[in-house]
Amino acid sequence: METFLIRALQLIMSLSLLVIIHEGGHFLFARLFKVRVEKFCLFFDPWFTLFKFKPKKSDTEYAVGWLPLGGYVKIAGMIDESMDTEQMKQPEQPWEFRSKPAWQRLLIMVGGVLFNFLLALFIYSMILFAWGDQYIKVQEAPLGMDFNETAKAVGFQDGDILLSADGVPFERYDGDMLSQIADAREVSVLRNGAKASVYIPEDLMQRLLADSVRFASYRFPYVVDSVMVNSPAAQAGILPGDSIIALNGTPISFSDFKQTMAERKKNEATMLKDSIDPRLISLTYVRGGATDTLTMRVDSAYMMGVTACLVTDRLLPMVKKQYAFLESFPAGVSLGVKTLKGYVGNMKYLFSKEGAKQLGGFGTIGSIFPATWDWHQFWYMTAFLSIILAFMNILPIPALDGGHVLFLFYEMIARRKPSDKFMEYAQMTGMVLLFGLLIWANFNDILRFFF
Image 1: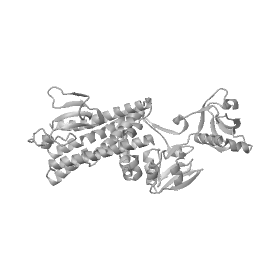
Image 2 (image 1 turned 90 degrees about the vertical axis):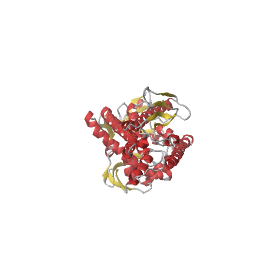
Image 3 (image 1 turned 180 degrees about the vertical axis):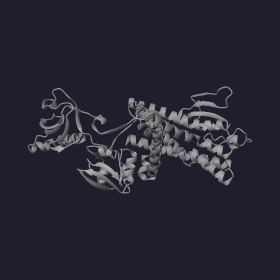
Image 4 (image 1 turned 45 degrees about the vertical axis):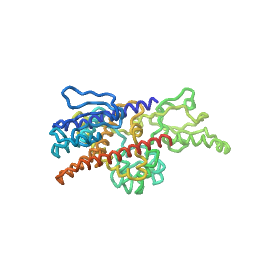
């Protein structure tokens, strides 16, 4: 329950900020061109509002709705979410949206998208300034990667060190690298000290979208962090800081050790029939640069009585870079543009069968936030959501900003406005489409939760 509340709070805080900034973009451009804004509402408020006030000598009412699905600004003289068609039947006023030149109306409509994108760039810049950037150089991961079943079916093997895709070297393991692999014809890996090739099928990304586990994860060395008193490990002489590199003569990672011990426990009866003690193991370890081997019996739960070190930057080669204040801005812009390109590139998978299943609603969005409060991850996810909000809103769908922009371009080219009746029908069509997508996305969340 605590995890749910922490994630829910982060989601609400993030969406509130993004909605205020987005609608603030529309609001500021509208006021710049002396267009009256009748209402600025955080969240939607059908039937009633939680809070509202209207400053003296102001044309704008500020409100907080009860339905946290977005927000809106009601701009005088346009057909929007409020569907206020009665206003459009009245004589045109100089302070209305419809009375302004097309280029001013265009800027008012793109203001929200622009502000969201600029917000993302600013957040990314401040993240780099405050925390810097750090990542594991994938080509230097000493034990390579563990791969899921789909990746293994394609030809990857546990322990492979990823080198390049179609000759382009990998740098870090992230969403961009996964797209790079899925779009490649050949991926080069280092396998058992020799270079090998894995040939990628065209439908790899669709197959990966159907997986419930990630494509790959780093293989961590088994470094002992602490040893329990009177445990089998303590009696055998294992000490904190020892690096276990082989089990029964076979090189291992931390995940290999856990898997092997689970298999020995499962096959205990069979091994005993063959006069093999499944709990008796041989460990090869490194201590202070020297390698040695010992024999020990694990307990009945097949545990040694140690805790492993899981601090990533102590186990794997980490690249760390700090940014001065002025340096952080071009780096933040570069990161924001890279994130946008990656997101746009992955949109093509949304129209596949598996991609449609992956479409998620508020449950999916909330799950990307960490289970414990982490300001670094909160701001990183907020910047990412701001990129998504900017891109989704500029799509040429009626009821979205991009739909209004599309009709404005038509007006500028054809030199005549679409009729109010057409705009009314387009707005209703867009809203039905958006609510349908919203219902489908949240229905997918429900299915994932129960099944």
